[in-house]
Length: 150
Image (cartoon, rainbow, N blue to C red; front, side):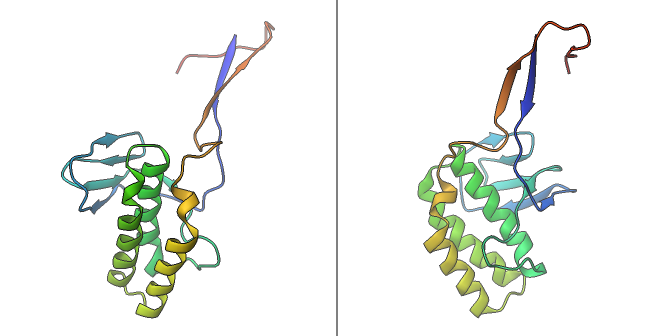
C-alpha cells in the first residue's frame, strides 16, 4: 500500500480569481492546474496559484503585488523548464514595467529591477527540492491504514 503527497513550502498569497497578463512571449504553450501560457502570449494565474509577493527586503504594497505575481509565474515557468532561462531579462524588465503601470515611484521601480537583476538569478534555476514535488511513501499492511483513489 502507498500514500502519495505533495510537498509544500510557505507562500504569502493565493490567487482567488483567474488573472491574465499579456506577454510578448509567443509560440509557447503550457497549461497546468495553476497557471497557463498560451501561444498568443496570454499568461494565466489560475485560482489556487500561490506566490510569495515581494522578495527579500522589499515590502508588499499594492504597487508590487500584481507585478510580483507575473514575475513569480515567469520564474516558475523557467524553474520548471517550460520557458527557456533566456527569458529571465524579459521577466525582470516586465516586472519593472508593471510596477510603473501600477503606480510605483520610478525610484523604487528602478531599485526593484536592480535587485532582481543582481540577486534573483538563482530563483530562475531548477530547484533541487521543487515545490509541489510528489513523493510516495510505502505503507505497512495494517487494517486501519487505507488509501482511497481520488
